[in-house]
Length: 453
Image (cartoon, rainbow, N blue to C red; front, side, top):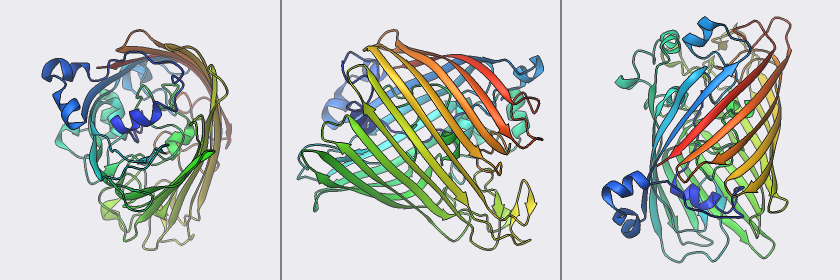
């Protein structure tokens, strides 16, 4: 189960090419080979439009589920990324993207070099089909498309049948305007890129593992609105960019209250792009005004009064040398609650008086060669109110996990990512998040195949 949040397309590919753990060496890749073999490369060469695909599949098992649970789906929860056991069709992506010629990639990074003096216009489009698309959908948009029935309204049936869903989490126009230091704009529906992990699993993305952190689950998957960005400083020692936007809220195109949310970021890079630090946030009322339009699970509250929700992420990455690199993140979130009987949590009932959560995670990577890397990740996530990790779990307490794995690029089209992960929970005595409510630990093994074409 992957709450596919950004993503990205050609523009992100270009930006991450200077940031990722493959930067020391380059080699031929298979992205876009299918489209070019069928239609040629005129669209890309003459118009700068890139078309590519990604098939993300895996085989997964854990040591806690029963045979019946494995057959009925979601037996890895609250592990996120691949929630089903056995062979899972995670997602098939179609990316169509026209990158900007500017000094900043929206939602990703400011870029070094001189600012272009001409305006540039582009767009980003992502469509995905598979199990992970269930939690990549946006309320008021693709959540209830006919192709997603009956599982869109019957979650138990979707789980039993391991139903695949269709989602369109990125559909936005972009522009670069050469005013002042240069202004970048994005408008439409898009992943907010809030947090260290930014799916989908593009080759150049900073996702070293198939499974995701608990911090990833706590962050919004899509937003709808407008975000503006600019490069504030471009010097010999550093590059600084900032972004600010207004959006409908978390994972919704149809606003369920009268208030918008504010999101933004401050991004710092060294001039050689070998170290970066981002601060990102989203703040706004997220309650449902009435029971006629409850946007659960992302908006659990129903209240006639505004209930402020906020999420903050401080994350960064550093390359130590040609082999070693490290990324890390700290997140904090809070959902306000006035405690009135009229303020109702759809899970716990009336009188909701607030919740908070925080987490930290770090990943260390050793790049042995251009096509082979090894990584280990450690994480801690505290959700004492059992609030933010819905729908993966409502357990109240602390989650800890250690993950180890590798990435091997078998050829230009296929990458393999096996991993082993161990999760531990410490919290409310009544809560057992693993093994369908029986256990507090879980050992999971999976082998993921990423097929780029």
